[in-house]
Every structure is written in C-alpha cells, then in structure tokens.
Image 1 (cartoon, rainbow, N blue to C red):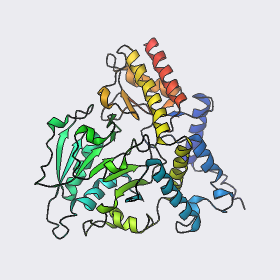
Image 2: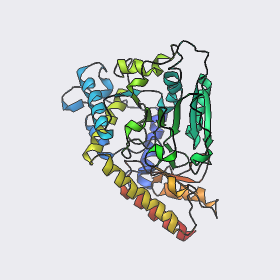
Image 3: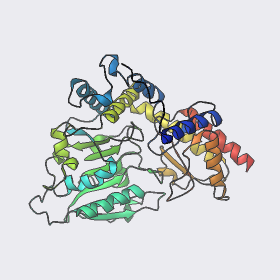
Length: 404
C-alpha cells in the first residue's frame, strides 16, 4: 500500500524543494545542470533512470528496493557478484587479485595500506618502524604520506612535486634495497592539481621490485590499466563509477594475510576478502549503483572506448584554453595534464575568476570553482560528463572572454 506523504514538510525540506524549483525555472529552463563537481560527480543519466525505475521494486519483481534488502539475501548476493565480475572484465583483473568493496573513502585506505602491507615481514615486532616510499605530486599523496606516519611507518618522501608536474626520477631519493622499502605509493591522478600519470608507472622510473600502491580515485576506470603493474589499486567510487559510500580496493593476493595483529577490523583486507566484503553491512546501494555503471561502461565498448571519449573531451577543453591567447591558462605541465580534472585561471585578470564562476552557474554550468587551496577554476570531466557538457563550457569560455 502506498504511504501518503506528510501534508506539512519540514521547513528545511521545503526550502530545499523551493530552491531546486527556482533553480530549475530561472537558470536552465527545467533541464539538468551541467555538473563539473570534483566529487561526488555526475552519473550517467540512463544509469540514474534505471536506478529510479527500480527504486521501489528491484528488477520489477523483488517487491522491495535495494536499500531495503538484506545484504545476505540472494538478490544482493547476485548484485555484488555481478558488480565484481563486470569490474574484473573491464580492467582485466587477474585471478590472483582480490576485489574488495570497502567503506571510509580512499582516505581510510591511507591508514589501511600501512596496516596491511608495511609490517608483513615483521609481524612479531610491532615496535619496528618499516620504511615505505611516497612520491608526492599534490594534495592527496601528501595526505597519504602523513597518515602513514601516524600509523608508525617511516614514510620516505622520495620527491615533492610543484603541484603542476611529476618530479624527474633523477631527483628522487628512493629507499635503497638494503633498507627495504615495503611499498611505493603514488596518487595516479591528483584531483585538486590536475596532475596525472600517463601510461605504465615504470616509465617514470618507479622501482619494480617493491609493490606499487596507487590511489586511482579520480581516474579509476577512465582508461585501461595493466593491473599487474600494481600491488594495490584503491579508489573512492564517487568520481567515475558511482555515488559516494563505497571504496574499491584491488589487492594482489600474496599481500593478504599479513596485516599487523592490531589492525582495526574494518581496515583489514584479509577479513574483508575472507568475508567477500560482507563482514558487516556494506554500502549496498552504492555497490548496486557501481554495478550499473560497470555494465554501462561495458556497453560502451569497454575502457578503450571510454578512454577515447575522455581524450576527446579533455582535448577540446585544453585546446580552448590554448586558443584563448593567454586569457585562460592551465598551469600543469603538458606531459601530465589530467584527462579528468582541468584546472585553469585568468592570469591577467584574476578578479574575473569569481565573476566567471558566478556567470557560469547562472547559465547552468555548476561547480567550476577551483579547490580552496589553489583557487582559480577547475572542470572535472569524469566518464559520465557528456561531450555536450564540455561543448557548453567551451562556448561559455569563449563568450566570457569576448565580453571581458
């Protein structure tokens, strides 16, 4: 039986509803906004429509929605198993790697990584201070190194980037073999600064004799990667593959079973692996949404096709910046410019940047303000950002320049 809504919604709910209605009428004629948010980010509209259609009755026959069903029931078991299978197909994940659906965001993994990997050769000596190498190329890799130090790791920062490039390998201070670094950590794409590793990480001089750990939160499933290049890949879902709430960890199985004895249960990869990510109630709806996105990416032709689309989108935006004759500028080294997060400024008239963001928002192009730590503007153009959205941004940029 359908339950009637409350006749008097809370003032807070009413304000939100009225604000959304006003935006729809006044800003963009009732159509959806073009969302350049760095995360949570836009999701494919047909995926949202499918989730909407199943919200009350999963599959049209379950009699309840995913948010309501038991995580140990047959329906959800099928959902999580298919999500893993499709992700394995997308990334060609080998059988000797486990796929975990965890909680706490990629930030929780900043601690989980050392807990699970750093003490694997000294489990009987928790007073040991194992070494691990961190290449810091922006805000998130710096935070990862800082968290490892809190856990008790001797986190060696091999080099610190200038927030717009990846330091040359000749300048790195890599832990020598005798000292025994337990892993080498990178952030594959710095969301805030827009710095991205291209191709195999070994091309940058990263040692191949220690497990490579990569935070791929903001370029996960945006292009093919060779999973075997990595010991651990981890990513928050809320940028490229779904809503916030689930973190995906792909870990080589020989790194399991060696966590510190005092590792918090919810950070212990082995516990999660043995329980098929169901040690406790997982973020069921987020996993379901990721599954729908994985299916969508496969239907597009896999990650090779997805990468082609992403290159077209970012190429269009970078070309517009170049053709502006210096009115707009992207500070990032050409060789490592992100396909996902494009920062840009108005260097000759920085006061116009605030105006740019305001006028863009009035035109339905939202969340273009740069991160508070760097300023300027930033367009996050993840997988689900349609080509038409980038075209609208480019058209607005040209119009804004002509007027200012």
